Length: 354
Image (cartoon, rainbow, N blue to C red):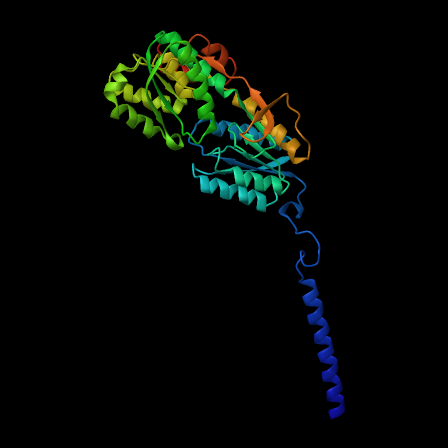
C-alpha cells in the first residue's frame, strides 16, 4: 500500500510540474519572446486612427475646424481622437506622448507653443508616426506637413483696411496673441509692412498670453489716455476685438477708434454691419479642415504629400500647403460670408433694424 501511495504522489508531482511549466510559458511577455509588442490598433480594428491635439477651444473657430476635420476623416474611414490642452503646454506634450504610446497612425497638432513641442514631435516621428502642424507651426521639428493660411497676408489685409479707414501717418495700437504662437509673428510682419508703407506709428502694443481676452480688456482700461490718442487698433483675432470694442464703448469711443480683427466670428460680423468693427479676415476653415483631414489620412497610410511650396521651420524645409485669406467688411459681407454659407444672414443682421 505504501508503495502504491508513493507511486501516486510521484505521478501527481509530475502532473503539477507540467501544468506550472505550461502556465509559465504561456505567460511570457511578447517582447521577451522576440515578438513585436501588441498595439491597440492590432486588437481587432483596421481603421486608421488619428490623434488630434488642440491648443484649446477658447477661439470660436476651433470648434468648426474640429467638426469638419472629424467628419471628413470619418468619411475616409478614419477615427479621430480629439484632445484639448486648455492652453497648457505640459498637457499638450502629455497628449502627444499618449498618442505615441497608443501607436496612432498619424498625429495632428494645433500647437500652443512653437518651440516647446519640438522634442515631442521629433519623438513621434522617430516612432514612425507622421505629424501634421495644423494652422500653426512647430519650429525645428521637421514635421511631415504644415497646413495653414498665408498669415503674413492676414496681417497685410488688416493693415490695408485699417490705414484705408484712418489715413496715412496715424497712431495705432496693436493687441495680439502670445509671442509663443508663431502665427502672431507672421501676422505682425504683414501688418508692420503696411504700417511702414502708410507711415503709421505704433504707439502701444500688448501680447495676450493664452489668447486671454481679459488681458486685452485690462490693457485698454489701464492705458486710457494712450487709447484716446489712437486712431485705430489692430486686434490679433475677433475675440480680442470684441472685448476691446466693449472697453472702447465704456470710454465712449466705440465706432470712433477703428478696430480690425480676424477669423470672421459671428459676433465680429455683427459688429461690422453695426459699425463698431471695421473689418475681419475670413479664413475658409472648412476648406482648411477638409484638406487637412484628407492629407492626414494619406500620411497615415504611408503616403508622402507632394506640395508646390515648402516652409523653413527654423532648421528644416517642410512641405507647406498655404490657403488664401479674404478681407471682409460691410461691402462684401453678403457675398463672402453669407453667400459662402459661413453665417446665416438673419444671424449676421440680427441687431440691424431695417
